[in-house]
Length: 119
Length: 110
Image 1: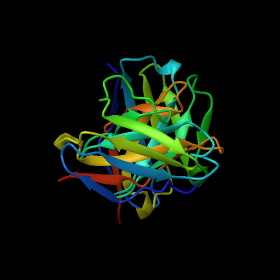
Image 2 (image 1 turned 60 degrees about the horizontal axis):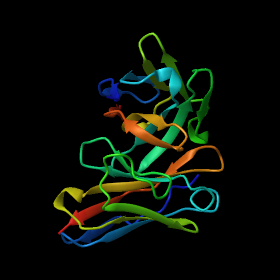
Image 3 (image 1 turned 180 degrees about the horizontal axis):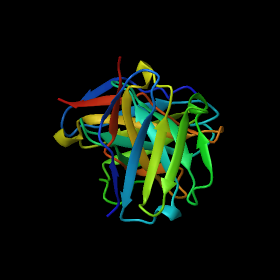
């Protein structure tokens, strides 16, 4: 069955970068878009970015433009999200989320990766 | 893009029905039938319960139903069960070719 397995929690200092990985199982990565969504403590989720099935197109929410980069490695069926110039406001649970093709929504979520930004 | 507006909390007794609202604008909820609802138990990843305003994924109980009127979408859970106690949030596709989420609603089954 479909599984998205993310990397372990990270603690970073302000100004640093973090790269979160998402290894996919049970479906063909090159057939589906993948999203990244984050959820700060006690808040609703926030959509960050999307990468297309062929991996050559990405789109970012305006607030993450220039600071977030989504890539993928088809040889390992893994998608990555790197976020730079971290501040305390980036402390959140980061999820990779599989696109539900043709439905404009999300059907499978990773378990989440907690990124804590603290000096 | 501002977040969709949901009530912070709702509650109901076992067997009753509850409805959670999700208010957006004419550029998201009001423009597209691409509203979804997710259930999230503490410490767990969200699970899709409604997509396309009214559709249930395979395996989701028919006690969950969705609707939309204007800029407001709604999730109704009928025949409340203790296991329905969880967080619920909505999402919508937007005219900016992005997605927006609600702030989430905590459902308490009394």
